[in-house]
Amino acid sequence: MSDRGVCWLAGQVVPLEQARISVTDHGLLYGDGVFEGIRFYGGRALLLGEHLRRLQDSARAIALTLPWALSEIESAIAEAIAAYGQPDGYIRLVVTRGPGALGINPAGCAKPELIVIADSLQMIGDKARENGIRAIIASTRRLPPDGLDTRIKSLNYLNHILARIEANHAGVDEALLLNDQGKVAEGTADNVFVVRDGELRTPPVTDGALEGVTRGLVMQLGREQGLVVRETSLTAYDLYTADECFLTGTGAELIPVREIDGRTVKSCPGPVYGKLLQGFRDCITEQTRGADDRQEQLQGT
Ligand code: PMP
Image (cartoon, rainbow, N blue to C red; front, top):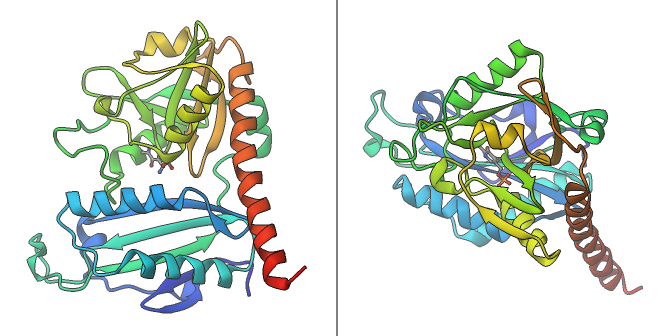
């Protein structure tokens, strides 16, 4: 048991700082691999099925054959969570093409690597989460989906990192990326939503958004709460004139935005955001309660 990060690698769970992979891994040399970020609450991974489906799709899209059954990946996640020893945390699941010869050709990479890290992750302080964050629109553009489909959650994050550096230089919390057409795509590691005229709006995946698992849950919660939910192209103007704006992601959870490029968002945290956050928290409570019930059943209480 540990409250420090741990890593499952090749069937062993070790303290995070002891985990090692080969320097010839094409994941390192070329960003050749895919990953998932998954939160666990009450010892159980939230929306695990959705994350594993996206992992499989991302791997298939880059012609990386996963040599593990889903049940083996689930077991590795369960072992990492158990060894981490905390009820709540974050799983980083990485699949690389594996070690191979120098040179870009992946044909010689015979053994993909599975890495499962369990640790804590706080992307944003509690105060910013309550009061809302400040964001800029980055000059770095999201890579066009016809270059690399944005539904693939690959290890290539360099343009997101460049956008993140822009946010750091500007002294704000986050950067939003436009696509090559000037349409809003997403944040550096999160999806973006606006509320306008009582509707919940988010860019379509075809505008360069990752098909976020949290995005999907929030859209479902919105519909259950009677909102009109639309995937529709947004421009900078739509962000500046929104009634509410917020970000979603596994790491981010739900974060309200209070300022974009120096324009104050009308309402932050707004009422629609507040209700969706409550719905999101209820999902987590339900899951945690489920875990407690099972624990009691196991203990015969
Ligand atoms: N966009 C990008 C670029 C991301 O890295 C993430 C985080 N994985 C998201 C959106 C949010 O996706 P999810 O809700 O599945 O974590």
